[in-house]
Length: 145
Image 1 (cartoon, rainbow, N blue to C red):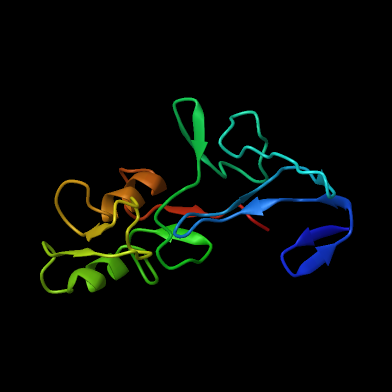
Image 2: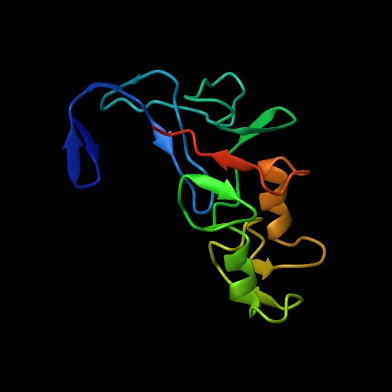
């Protein structure tokens, strides 16, 4: 048996998935043999196959999780109902988009500790870049079943 905190699972083959804060999750493309012996799965490695299509973003030789999922659902949206951009504006005060807030918050899409709607290093540009950059109506779907 393999101990996972206060739970036990039986040795076997499992798909392994990860999620982080306001990032879209991803999962191994094939089951991984798990037991009491530690296994290293490097989701940063280009060679690590993941389930779905474009489950991670490539930055040079490193794979990254897609950032900007402020609402923690299965889609990344810049405009429309349920978009991930509006909560950033709401957190900085709504009526003054130039405000910023120092906070550990889901709206901090670039993880710098400051939530900004406008200006350099703002958090809404991360969302726009991760849906494709030039078409604000595009969406990105999380690649987990």
